[in-house]
Length: 268
Image 1: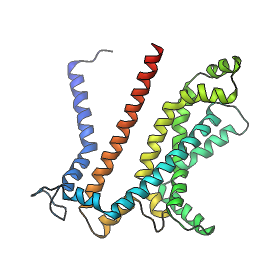
Image 2: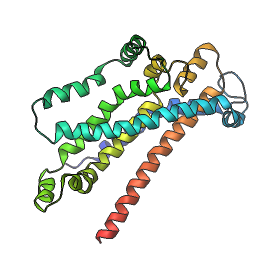
Image 3: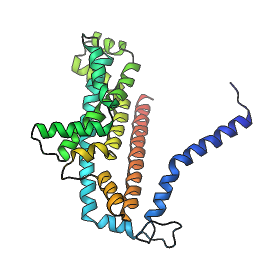
Image 4: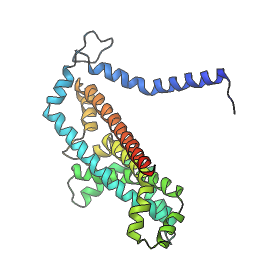
C-alpha cells in the first residue's frame, strides 16, 4: 500500500517525538553529570568532568560495579543454559506435563518484583541462608530465566523440525544434532536472551534491594544516594551505566554481523 508524502512526514515526526520523549530524561542526566556544582540545579552555570574522574578513582564505585557485574554475568550465563533446555522442553517435544511445565516456568514473570523479592527474602531467612550477592543471583534468576526462556522459545518455534530429522536419518547422533543443527539455529535467540538477561540483572533494583544483604549493587547505591543525600556521582554513574549498556548492545550486533559475514564468505 502506497502512503502519501504527508503521511510519511507525519510518521517521521511521530517517531522523532517518541524517541525524544524516551531519551530526553537521559539527556538531562547527562547535563547533570558534567555540572561543576555539588547540588543538582538548572540551568547549569559551570561545567566540569571532575565527577567522572572521581568515579573512576573511587574504591566504592569499583566495588559496586564489580558486584553488579558479577551478579549480571552469572545470571546471564545460567539464564542462557536454562533458557536453551527449557525452550526445547516445551517448544520442540511432546510429553505428558508439557503444558503445565510451560505455565509454571513462565509464572514468575507476572509476579510484582517487590512481592517476589520479599517472598524470596522470607524464604532465605526461613532456611537460614544469609542474604548476599549470591542470594541476589538466585532472586534474579527466578524472574529473569523465564524471560530468557520465552525469548529462546520464540526462536525454537520458528525452525522446521525436519532439519533435525534429516540429520538423524543421515546417521548423526543426538549430541551431534544438538551441536551442529539445533544450537546454531537457536543461537540468535540465545544471544538475544543473554543480552536481555544481562541488562535486566544489571539494572534490577527491587529484587536486589531485598536479597543482597550487606552487599550492594549499583542501582541500590544510586537509590540510597538520591534518598539520603544527593551526590554528583549519581548522574555520573547513571550515564556511565547507560553508555556501557549501549556499548554492550553494539558489541553484540557487531559480533553478529561479523559471524554472518564469515559464514557468507565461506558459503560463497
